Length: 148
Image (tube, rainbow, N blue to C red; front, side):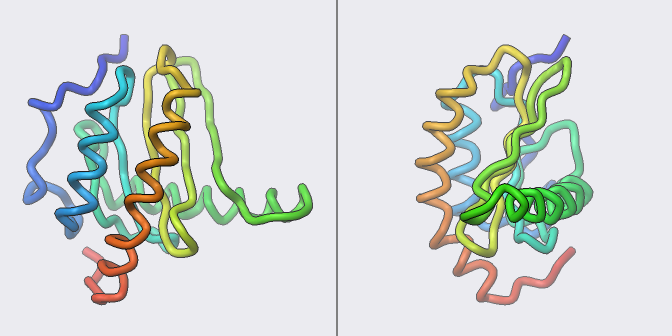
């Protein structure tokens, strides 16, 4: 059985295996806290560098690398579908979902959930989070923060 994310169990930003942007971290925590069934969240660059994470059961750097590879494949599949750039990828398993959202042209938001999450509500909340993430993510990536 998969438990809902308990904010008291979240690692402190300093405990992450990635440099953490405080504004991005705050937005992730707010997203995770706002929706029952969210098990974790990650913001990373499209090339797999983690920026901020709320991932109590996963390493940010390895998760960001997997997401970057998935994003590349998803982008190719979106090209096959026709017009427009990739906007999201949804992977469903027996125990939950991994939902990957594009954040501008250089970033990605990944949300890990339980199977009982309200996906429609996740999409609404993620849309707001994506809009809030664009500028802090751009600033963080433009600052040239080295990969861990």
